[in-house]
Length: 136
Length: 292
Image 1 (cartoon, chains in turn purple, red):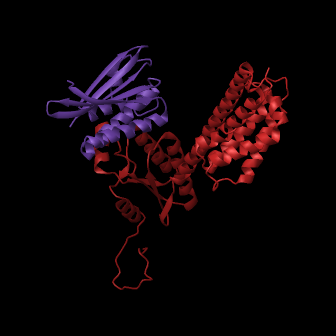
Image 2 (cartoon, helix red, strand yellow; image 1 turned 90 degrees about the vertical axis):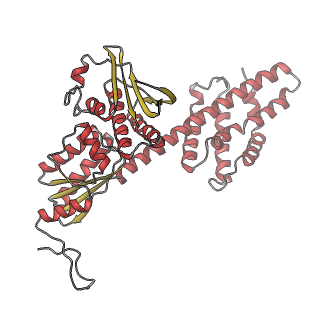
Image 3 (cartoon, chains in turn green, yellow; image 1 turned 180 degrees about the horizontal axis):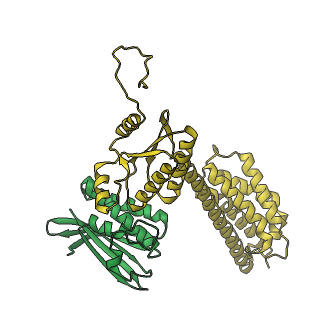
């Protein structure tokens, strides 16, 4: 359930340095939106995980940050999109400990737990869009 | 074909003097470079331009005959970048030659509109391309500076400190990307060997984000230290980091963790059968901790 988009910003995810940039931009946004310190850390960590997924599995893409307003609630929406190979089995990818790379296999499932809403749209050989929202 | 080179050649001294005059007006950073050096660079540059043979076309800057000039400009820009000049000040070195050439062209072909226009176009193109080349080289020079600073920061940011005999601590600060974690791991393992330490405390108070990659690197470092016979204690886990780690599902249960560096230090002392006690006497010579 989305809401009215108040403002947006696009951040490229093309290199390791961009992942650092993603963390810094998301941190600036959640700080400005006055999320609690715990929530700030959760959102930034989820952004870091998803940005690295976009880079490593999606072969690079971009992040769109939006501030949402739904009634009295404000929230931050992070949309990571890439034109990479896609995810053949989303349920498997969301299993704790499952990885196709060399990581811990907790990035996708972990960030799902860190955010309130979490959607994956993917098509093999077309790309993946991971969209997630955290409400205040 | 251009006659411009010929014109420059026959008026070398006049052109050089005008150029230097222009530059002196344009460049205000006498504190960074002295007149003699600028004059020397300009003379070398102009002589290099003159030295280009007649057959080579002045319009074709990609040609090999212009290579020495481009290299000279590149060296100059890189050194200016390091000295702290702005890009415009660096480009001004070449650009201030333009009015001089225009003046020269005007004196020579002032009453022949067609040739005047042709020569001005060539000179304009020539100088612009040299200026662009200067700017490109300047940026390359800056990139070198940035790269070197990054390397310096990489080394600076990972100090391993000896807390006590046999106890080392590694206070981590900032982003732990893969390049840095490698350095961190190496310096910790080497410090363990060098100091014969049995305890290593890794403090992550200064790490803003602990995601799965950072956790994985930490776990690898801890495992490697364990293989070398050292026990690792992870400290500086702030409340928000602890909650995030739990939600992410990272298992740190096999790692000894403490909230504060002081707690970790106390634990390391205990495990090595030592204890910190308060002494009653106020003798300043007393050791801060007594070994037993």
